[in-house]
Image (cartoon, rainbow, N blue to C red; front, side, top):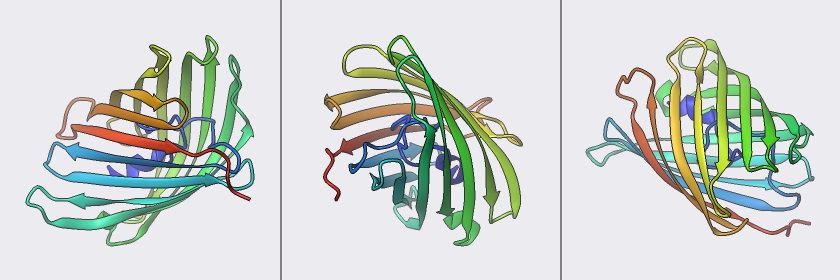
Length: 224
């Protein structure tokens, strides 16, 4: 599951809480922090933080990670994520865009080894951005099993009101049952402070159910 989460590591955006990424990056010379807590069906709790900055205008760099706590209170090894993302065609209202993301993730479940991944995010805007579709296709190298996987994601954002959005998505790897997630995001302060909550599971069950709550903070441009 930690490996699947790298599909949307950075709000890299189809912003939190989506795992399927979008063809957007943080504003030039600005930063954001996405943080969230996730409760899994097996009783484990994940606590994530992923700061990201756009230093050049078209390169979003994310450095973050997570701590996982078992149901008994013990702490499992932490996950670490490093990702870069750029756009070849920015997403415009009523248009489309695409880009490329490359990254690595330290997976404590793989003996401390690193998984490597890359994917192409594409987004399609409708109704002046009130409805946006996102599609990802990519590759992941699982260091624990030394296998390569094709990864994919398909998601949507629907604006319900000026500050409220409904998200729905499905994602997975070509050699396993896909997952799905549904949730709501709400702007406490437009374009600056956002909160969200989601419910997710694997199609057909299998003990992968989870819920999450998150907080996203975005800065104005301040970098030199």
